[in-house]
Image (cartoon, rainbow, N blue to C red; front, top):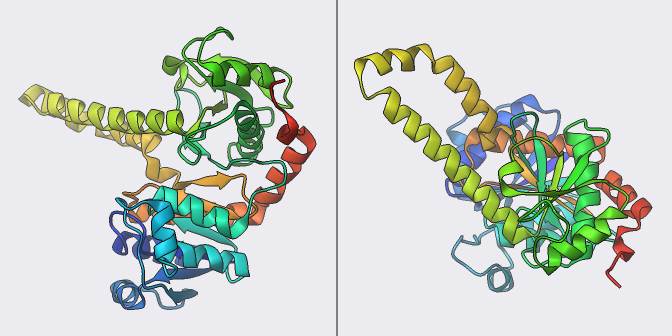
Length: 337
């Protein structure tokens, strides 16, 4: 097994990407393929103890920056690191792809290289988020911003398969993100999707409102990529704000500073529960190949965990499981008449 890593993708690339890759290589029984500008990667590798690690470099001279249009940049830059990395997976030189770079470019490069699974019309990013009880799968969190009702049914089937593997949840409860729990609430997309989900081959429990996203009453939450991405970004901002406010309040007086010292262990546990880097990244489900997409500001810890995630999903056969569940569900043929 070899994991292809877009070494130039991310806000802190190639530094944090290479650092996380080296840590992963020391602990995994697999090889890594670092894709990007060879000189820059070699400089970063020289800063870390990579002796004995199975790490190869594949030179790719171009980088797609966050402000660029994904489609235009991929056409203009055939040597872009994420495109070269995706092609390495397609050719068999690697078993999976990880990128913390431009999400749109990662999705398009993987889509072009791998193709879709039979019965899947649109891919989705399946992000694990914390709740009061146990983690849940949110999809789509940004791959497909415009969806049709049957796409959400396909997301529900794939999200359920992913929850069984990643969360060890044997009968995942599926909720549809909407503005009300009643099936008549929402826009045309959610109302039509609700009707399809009621007869789909998933354990559909109804609509989920915004305040209930983190309640832990469901195991899989489905929505279009625009809604999912906004939900995810608001959640990240809220966590940062809560941490900042707590720090400010606990350091304002001598008494609260003492309380801060005494509660640090609890805050460390809190931070671990809500830290995105604990999960590493989100698999792009629905494609005939494995791609894990990381946060743009991925730390070396997040990169390490994302590579471990990718290796685990290769070993556990995530893609064949998704293909099997989609085929058995008949989700690809479900439409509103």
